[in-house]
View 1 (cartoon, rainbow, N blue to C red):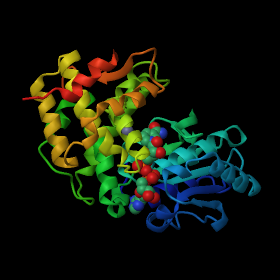
View 2: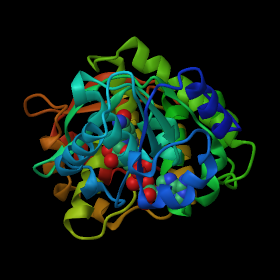
View 3: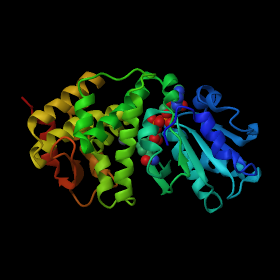
View 4: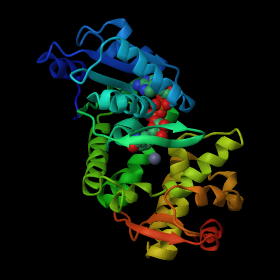
Length: 343
Ligand SMILES: NC(=O)c1ccc[n+]([C@@H]2O[C@H](COP(=O)([O-])OP(=O)(O)OC[C@H]3O[C@@H](n4cnc5c(N)ncnc54)[C@H](O)[C@@H]3O)[C@@H](O)[C@H]2O)c1
Ligand SMILES: [Zn+2]
């Protein structure tokens, strides 16, 4: 749900069942910036707060075990509630730990990054990285509630705001041409701009609709991967070479290449692909140098869990605002997307 008063909502949510024990998962930054916003919604003992260091590498089994141990020792049970206050790393880690402890403790997500508000906290996927593989272990289990308040955007670093914005652009591109038309000419709203409310609401609506139709990702849910086949490859290769970029930046650049491939395979009008490229360049900057060496990205795409055989899977746009899943291309065809100049 969307609110402008997250503290009262959490108070109401927990007031009717005062016997319910509350536990929280946060990282150091959300403890510093977001906890003060909601503190006092209800009495929560300090040792019921599990706080970990921020960063993707902390989304690991060790931290899950720490949560199980700490909360278990404090008498958590299935009538308790875990509140995950943070970005996608907190919701993935806290959601997974809660889902697996005692066969499932109910949890609520309070997303504090734009990416978590429009993507990570929506749809019920939770999980951790394992043996170097991202999101390798996890479950799909819906939170009791997702409480979204844009107040948290005020303290979010600019790059994190941009990163989430890429997922809003993606939502518009796959499902709402009107939204794309409205946001494409503009730059990013300022963190306190009321414009975030309709943008977040619409992105969440789109993700909900897609996930509801295909909760187990056998078909339509793959639409959410637009930009992600190339984007994940770029993200992984840049991590490997020690120059990581935020997820959303990689996805935005990935959408440019996948829009070009959509022109070749799905009939996306070339003018629309150009438009996507222009918007991405304006908001996220010049295309990455690595796109001049696409052969370095192909192995990552081949490795993607979503592929079958020697073909690499994509979601493509037949036009802005629509999406087709179940496309697959061979390597040689993909390379053309990097070479092809759009005049
Ligand atoms: N489960 C899903 O469906 C799903 C979907 C997309 C992404 N994800 C996962 O989400 C993760 C990325 O999420 P993210 O981008 O939110 O990263 P994140 O949780 O690491 O947050 C980014 C940074 O912002 C800080 N932060 C968070 N809220 C803040 C605030 N209000 N003010 C100041 N600082 C704040 C965090 O401490 C962190 O340093 C990845 O692990 C990805 O795999 C999951
Ligand atoms: Zn994404």
